[in-house]
Image (cartoon, rainbow, N blue to C red):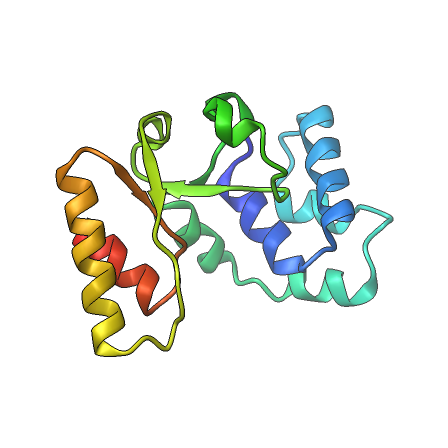
Length: 151
């Protein structure tokens, strides 16, 4: 499992997906005890702007990020339907990811939702959660936040 500091440094670099996948594969393959940020900064395929973004991460931000409870989900944790989809290079979760193996529904929408839109998203999410359906959403404001709160 890759540690949160690696993910935070990788995401801060804002790498293109192919380059991010290479960094992930390389970091896993070398299983180094080196600090993830130092390791990433040594990679020859990083552009100067990517290096700068990694260098600009404060050490205390890395430490705080590691304590949030948000983690990268490993592919062996994916349900069959999730594993069959074309995935981005990383999927993050907080809480018990095993619920993704139960019936799920996605509730997603605009960040700039109206009061009515948030109320409807909340009612749907609450009803599905009460019925034992896992509500999945992004981490955005608006509809996504209303769904998470209600579920």
